[in-house]
Length: 206
Image 1 (cartoon, one colour):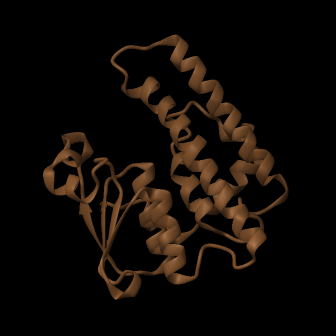
Image 2 (cartoon, rainbow, N blue to C red):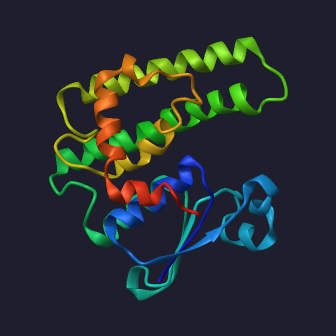
Image 3 (spheres, rainbow, N blue to C red):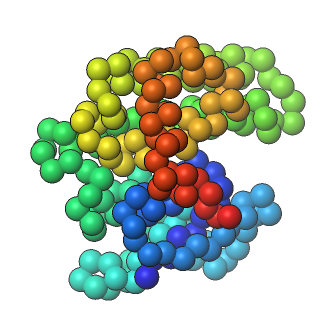
């Protein structure tokens, strides 16, 4: 059995979407980060960085338990465990990994800053809002160009790169982004939103 320690954030939802897509049985342990539960000693023992998500697989490599932190690493682990959601062809696999890294290094961190300064900062800081909003628009433009001539981020195959990116773009309204400005992203976003496994994963934890 797989245990998912998570909360209703984009990084957490990446993993629940992947688990739903793969049809793997799992249990959910909600870690309420609004109450600081990620700093509880029991959780920090799982992840010294005190961040969700954390995945615990009782049937890991060699049929031994394994605990994995960092959402990108968890996605790669699940893809390797099942042989799914990463292309077999090496070139296409590298495409998927590259765009997963783009999500980890750009999409998540930069859109997360927009969320913070627009919604959670104790005061509005025009410089920060302008800086990160501009970067968010640039990132959406990069994705729009990428998706202009391919169905999915890695090309013809749906992959963990798409799964990693979607929950962040699902909060486009938080970022002040009108998806109609990015027609290729909008087409991709609607295709993602229509997937039953994505819909289920976005509801975790309930």
